[in-house]
Image 1: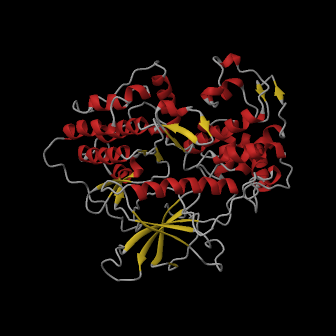
Image 2: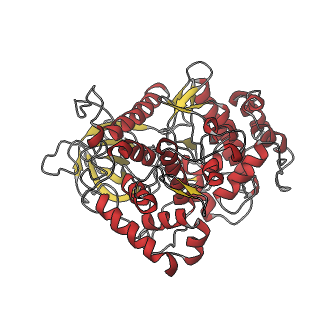
Image 3: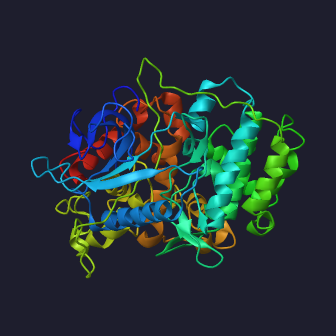
Length: 512
């Protein structure tokens, strides 16, 4: 965690969870926080098979809506299933899961705790500390990563989120894959994964794939693509697709996927690896399907060489920050002991998402579900139902029939046809942007707002001043580049920002 950042879940230092004493916070996300911990049963060695030091991922339950609980339960099922079914040296371990029983601390009572092994570092950390250019240990790293991928695929699973942050470096110099919240078990030729992804490691077929109630269809070839991106990065120090931002690189990916551009690999990519990366980054799923993880592993091992691999760098926590890297097992929770009671009947539309969106502030009931669901498709804490509601109120006063031909803006979100076309799922797009005619109904406009705001949140600079949620809304009205260049809100957008800020506070339960 960065200095001054508050964890999502507040746990006091010294708090006891079973045998574990909570230490400093290590990381925090939208739904959970990770803390360092030490076993109190022994001062050295291990007790009952447990290590002395561990990492605790804590997931609260007291303020969750029914939809969020269902989503977290789904993540829990994925996480626990893959840990239960797969035991392999290349996969990170979870030691146990507990439920906190502490009515005197309502914010923690009922929370689920995952006890994870602690890592010495990650490949993301290694890249940040290394000089520009290829990593000397890249061949050895890639061989071990591919071994873990082959094990997952052989067992019938797709990882779904292979990237540097999820490749962990252990204290004994071994490599392990972590973060299984998007892992999916195969059902025939494909699996279904939650609608989250890391843009730079997402294959073209998933950018606008159809989303069903089961999630997004995914295949093992998505991991093959991600491995190709990762291999190019480690072996050359650069991502293979050009662009200075994720948005620019996604545009390059779309042009490549549609045959408008050829793949231009770095001249620094070693010749032995060039055909491997090229096959991994084939345009279509069908082309990549010819190279499964097991055959890929044999090629990677040959390219890495049969001699002793370079010793992996020992990454220890910086003494200044006392930062300890953890095995990044993704947000999941253990459903047990009747901790969560979900009703069989659907929720009342007027009360849907009441934990995140005020029900007494004039937000039309007909749009509440669309607004809440649109926010839930994004993992960023910047994008909330209250923010989407504040933006729609400011843009159109919730008027689905709004028409402003002078600006070519229509509907509840003031979409222009050309911009809306970009943010529609592929199955909703007409053949040409000229065929996309207003009016644009809320069931089309509001989910597109969620997708656009999520992308803005990912590309908004870290040094933007003021309320980031407000800055995201202002970037929607202007552009990300304008907000990033100004490092905040320009004078000409302050009146708009003030309205967003006021309504954000108005629609957020308990204030923003």
